[in-house]
Image (cartoon, rainbow, N blue to C red; front, side):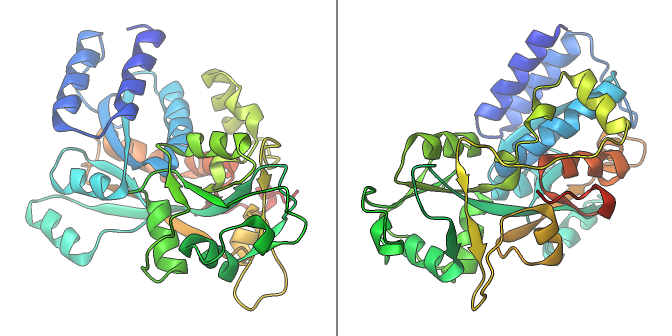
Length: 336
């Protein structure tokens, strides 16, 4: 099976909602292209269903893993968090990535069906507030963000004098069912409703593009989508895998196409950018944990990929994307 066909299949899976029929079809296609269906920890076929917020991160993890183990094929599905958890509970996949661990009830259900459950926090993801470079604002506090989300603040001139050239605030999320939406609603609005100025795109990438093109927009997006260790994204799979194996240090900066705002916590004087150092210290106030959960048996490809992501090289990839890996090597954390 050539690389072009493989990429076409993978992209088709990421474009739609996760479905059992699509999974069966994809396995059939890959097997017919010469991939072996027998699974070991480094070969065969496995699926992973991820919260779409982490597509950028998981794509890089898969690229390196498949480079190191060329007989392995990890098929990603990117969807909302609830669908990812449902797919595990319905035995459609053995691997998921979410922003919460399984509940005790969910764990008990899986164990009652003879599933061995492993779950591990793999990273801490900061949620970045991004605006168009034409916006003169540089700092938002958590109370201000809450008022923007609720619709109490509707114009940029109400937030900061000097923004009279801007109009109504337009808040842009990735997807109405995403974990990002859920986090902001629960942590800043105590479960309350968003105002009429809040809109949803389809993907984090579309949020980035919408803010870059609209001077009135403010986007809320995972830090990996605006971290411009962009040189790694321009590398071939081979170059990137080799850079991870060499233990190269990373230089985390942010994309210049948007402005990343500093955020100040409740009753705090100092505001912070979502750099890894400030996430690690707890200074940056908008963050959530990222978990990988597996029901793969020992010796299976699902278990092999789980071990890779939670191990040194998988955590190094996390560091390169801008999120804070669970296993932190302090000498590798760079603050620009």
